[in-house]
Length: 128
Image (cartoon, rainbow, N blue to C red; front, side):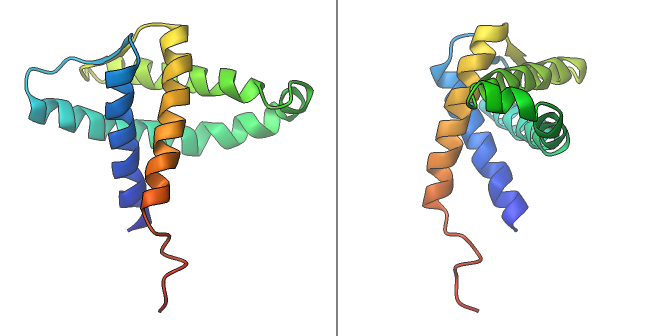
């Protein structure tokens, strides 16, 4: 159940990101198609973060320390670009228009996702 909640939160955060950041677009013909695209792209986003981010953290540990964590902004932007590229490969109507939209999109997505996660109660804290 936690995976589904996280998936919906990412889809909503991605939708808000497309509204806020110029250069990140969903260009489907209908609202239903746009919603399905956002759900699929959110799944791709989750898979990319689950698979690649831990590997990058281990391999780039020195850069994270040397840059006091600012390297994470670069990594997140590049992962966002990767999601856009994978979406284009899958012929999804989702487009990321370069590094700077990906950079700002990753920041907006992280902040919105965090804020939405605060609204959802943690299942570990609920009584049995």
